[in-house]
Structures are given as C-alpha cells and as structure tokens.
Amino acid sequence: MLAFTHKNGHYLSLDGAELYYEIMGNLNGKPLVLLHGGFGSMLDFNCLLGSIPSDYQIIGIDLRGHGKSTVGDKELSYAQYQSDIEAVVNHLDIYSYSLLGFSDGGIVSYRLAASENSKVKQLITLGSQWRLEKGDPSVDFLAGVTSGDWEGMFPDAVASYNRSNPQPDFDLLVNKVKNVWLDMTSTGYPNNDVGDIKCPALVMRGDDDFLFSLGEAVALVEEIENSKFMNIPFAEHEAHKEYPEVCCSVISKFLSAY
Image 1 (cartoon, helix red, strand yellow):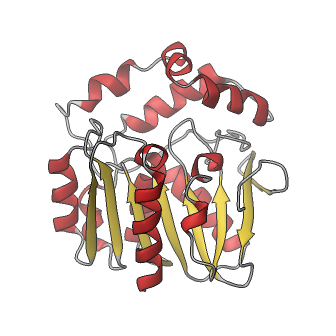
Image 2 (spheres, one colour):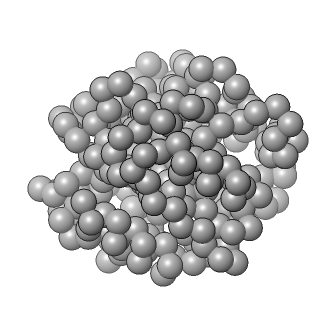
C-alpha cells in the first residue's frame, strides 16, 4: 500500500531551508506533485494515494516550515512556496507534471499553473481559495487563529509536526502562516491570474467548507477555461479525509482522462 512515511525521503537545501520530499509509485511514470495545506504535511494525502493511476510517479513535498521542511531565511508567502516548488521540480529534472493541492497547497498550485512558463499539465485543487478581498467572511477567522486554538482542534497534526520537524517552533510557524493567509499583495493569492491557467483543471470543495464558498468556487471555474467542478455533499474543508472514497474516484478519473 502506497504511503508517505517521513522516513525515506530527500532534502534540497535552498535559501537556508531544508525542503523535504518523497517519491513513490511508478518511478518511470508521469510526475504528480502533491501539496498539502497549512500546518499539514504530505502525510495528509495518504488517504488518497490509492486513487492515483499506476502510470504516475508521485512526489510529495512538505512546504517550507511544515512537516520535515525547515523555515530557513525567507519570510513565508504563497510566492515563496511557489518558488520552492519550482526549485524542487527543477532539481528533479521534471519538464512537465500534474499537481494536486489542498487548501494552501492548492493556492500555490494556482500560481504554478498560471505562471508564464508553467510546466503544469493537469491541475487538481481541493478547498483552495483563489482570492481574498476585504470583507471576506474568512478574514476574521484567519486573523484570529492562535497556536493554542490550532492544537486544540488538531492535536494529532501538531504532535506530528513537533515529532517530524528538525527545528520545531509551532508558535513561530503560526505567526508566519497567518501572514501568508492575510497577504493581499502580489505575493499572495493569484486573483485574476487564474485566467492564465490553460491546462485541464479540476476544482473540488466540500459543500460545508466555510473558507471556500460555493459562490467563490463557481466564479473560479468561470475564470479557468478548461475546468471541471465537484461540490462534495456533507463534507467540510478536509473533504479528502471525510469522504476519501468519493474524492479518490473523481481524482482517478480526471488523471486518467488526459
């Protein structure tokens, strides 16, 4: 059974950080990069790995400061995450690849797919906003998150971070990630740049996801020319963990279609 383990991966040194990644599946297959959400790690995708077609090489990357990756000398931003992923992809001599991103990982994925010299062949996102405007109902929640709140809601995730990260400092990470979430400048959300995404895209969300509303999802799909949309009934933000069998079926079909 395929699973990320945080045991047998590799590090790429970049800007004072150590970026951790693991490779599995068909090592000669088509590359598929997986990008997790805020305060998570590649381990969060283990529930989906069984859905990946056998002709794919699977590459999990822990975002800077998350999982087993250290923070380094740079401030965190979606633009910095994008630059980090591009560096890992180039290090692995990958010339085209597919992307599966959840939440923050999906926001980074939009930026990667929309970039001028994008190598992204297919794009899948789950629970991923594409813009943040003043007055958005999620702003108060994002601004109010504390390390204690997060540990109370997700004790296993924080414990995993403390075990895995070579330089754990969850209070520091929370403050840095909140700046990422609230960044309304060009280093933040892709905004209308999503219209530059030309590859096939699958946008997914849980029907009860309060961070990524149905209206925002529909507006996004209208911006991306070659896109499909799935709204998952009864699910919240982490739909892939709540209903993995539903997500697996659609992801497998999409990856096999192109």
